[in-house]
Length: 281
Image 1 (spheres, rainbow, N blue to C red):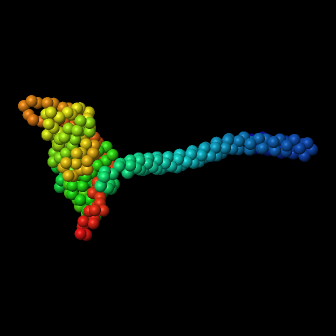
Image 2 (cartoon, helix red, strand yellow):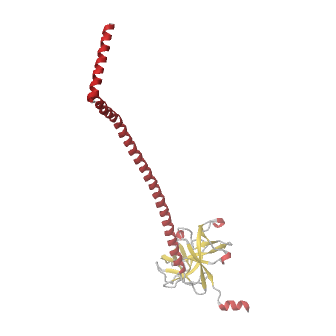
Image 3 (tube, rainbow, N blue to C red):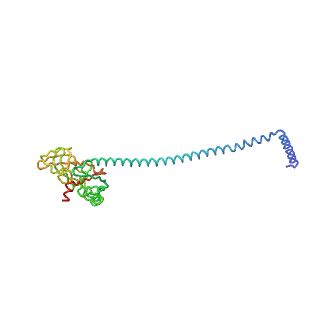
């Protein structure tokens, strides 16, 4: 480029700058323009950043709020579970209390006293081949072999073997079980034999001329010397007369729902005053 032309442009530019400077000193226009344009530029730059910051702050607040709600929900769920467990426990205790009160309301037969026991197992130990239950009473609490076991519905069975703190109860339905009974209405006598779980009881030795009807309740007669008289045992389900035999074919069902047993009563002979005097004579 021509040096003269360069020098011309430099001198012209210098004069133009001096002229603008002088004009700005008198008017202040360029100063105000730069101030406003700078603020607008800064605002234009900072405004998106501020919006992003506000959005980020709102997101953090919402996130923290959601985390707090989640923790509250988890706490409430734990409290609900605890309340449900407590409710189930209280309901179970109430039902157990009602059953025990019902047992304690069972009238004691004359010359007998009752003692409550809890069923802790079904068919356990070396006698598992038999239809038995295990109760939490043994010789230490006066539970001996052949002690009658009942519940509010009727006869459950008798103690087959007693340990120190537990005892095995031979159930009414076991084939080795025998109970002397009599009809509660027509007074026909017989002996109930167990036939195993799920099977009907068989009532033997009911005379052909006796009167006994389906639906009649059979109670203990006391003739076997084991159970007190008058305890409900079973309900007659069928009666069949066969002329070729001396006895009727009678079947019955137990009154006690064995699988649902949780508490039972042990019947012990009470020592009468005359009996205690006889021991000292």
